[in-house]
Image 1 (cartoon, rainbow, N blue to C red):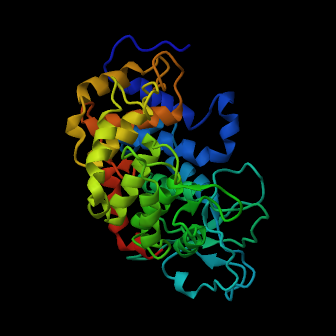
Image 2: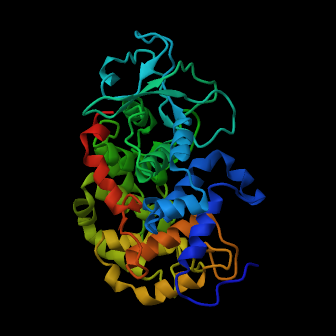
Image 3: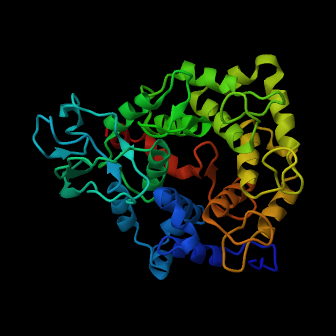
Length: 394
């Protein structure tokens, strides 16, 4: 078992080293997560951003983080419409100046980002054409003929967009149109979303991702909001919590995803006002606190639920009902000597629990971290970028 830090003060320098090292090398235990490498990068990058590292060139140099290199790697995972059938030939521009002239007649429901290079195949490549006065940089997408197993994954598209913006990218290489069309193809008749266009599970996690993407892009044409709301209502449990799919037990993670999605859609108050749902939900969330938070009744406390449930209560404007000092002490007690946070006291750290521990500590405003946008799960000040015209017209 990993030793926990002997003090409950926030060990910033150790955490910086942990997340920076994780961007360069991971232990073999992560091998089974190769399909989700983009999510692991997301956890590390946003944790560093909450600590202010991405704005500190000296620290970036010291720990060996190449922001532009990470951005280029993420874009290599973008799934683009194949070049065949494109009126412009085999090359296209990922910029606002050319998006309207693309021919999507052969579009094949693929768009967004995949999670890694685990299946091989050619990645998307770009040539930098430089910047013109008053305009964003122009990137030419080199001939892209697709790959048999390429499928955009809605969760990877969410994490890609959040991470690119955190790294200071202007999204000029992002193909917004194909990503939004892909969203539309992923929504099921019951209102839920599946994660890829062929043979996949569908549940509340992916509905949240679709709503987050639509909010960030200020384009809801890929989401049937009424059907999405209907699905969320169908997942209400008897105790007020919300399940991943209809008929299952309520859970902290799916509850957060539903509440966040409703917040982003602007329907939170309307939906929760029905039949005392909000009161039942608040009671369920508050009842999950032991010292830390448990994900559902009769389970042990776990650091990730400090964000999933603490964040839910923040969105409901009721997090003052928690004992935030006790919760913060529990999270800090799960720091380890190697940096990062473990799921429970005495375990090894992992990136998921480390990031969500950082997210709660930001929400608690106790450790001098940058403020979190609770619904999107990223640094609040970064979300201003989504209001810029260059982001909206990609």
